[in-house]
Image 1 (tube, rainbow, N blue to C red):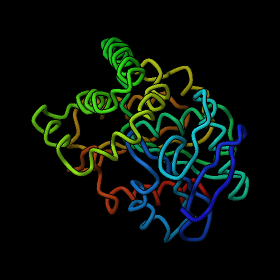
Image 2 (cartoon, rainbow, N blue to C red):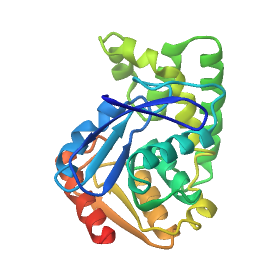
Image 3 (spheres, helix red, strand yellow):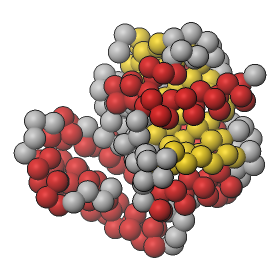
Image 4 (spheres, rainbow, N blue to C red):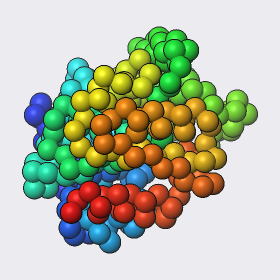
Length: 262
C-alpha cells in the first residue's frame, strides 16, 4: 500500500489506486486485506480509478479501540474524501454488509455492488449467528486466535479435515494475526439476517451478485437484497462459487457501474 489517509478517530488507513476514471472502492471481507481484492481491481482499472485498502485491524492500517461499525463507515467516508468526495462501492462477502451500511448512512456514494453477503433469509440464521458470536468473543478474549479462526472456517461450511489441514499450513500464522478482526466482520453482519429496514432506506442503485454453484441460501440472500432496496438488480454468475473468479465478476461490475454512472 503506497498511500495513507486518516479516519475521523485518527486511525491510519493504507490504500492503493490503480487506473483512471470515476472512483470505485473495493471492500474485502473477513480474514482478508486489500491485497485479497487486488486481482479484481485489475479488470476494473480499465474503466475506473480503483481503490483497494486494508480495513482497520489488518494489513498496514491501524486499529484504534474500541471498535464500532460506525468507525468503519467513517473509514469509508475518509477514503471517499481522499479520492475526490464521491465514489462507487463494491463489497465482497461481509465487506458487502459494510458498504450497504455506508450507503444507508448517506455517504456520497454513486452505486453499490455486493457479492454474496452471507446474510440469512431464515430466522434460524440469527440463532446460528448468536452462537458464533458467543464462542468467537470467548475465544478472542482468552487469546485463542487459532480457535477463533477455526470457528470462522466452520461457519463458512469448511470440512473439518480441510480446517485441520489449513492449521498445519504456512498461511495459518497470518490468519491468526488478523483473527481479532473477525469480531469486526461479525459486528458488521449484525444478527445475520437480511437487514430489510436498512436496505429499504438506500437511495442509490444496488447490484447483488451470487454464484450459481454457491449454496442456495447465498443466492437467496443476494436476491433478497436486490428485492428489498428500492433500485436493486440481481445477477447470478454461472459456475461461480464464493471464491469468485475476478475475470468473471469484473466485467459484470464494470457494466453496472458504467450504466448507472453516466
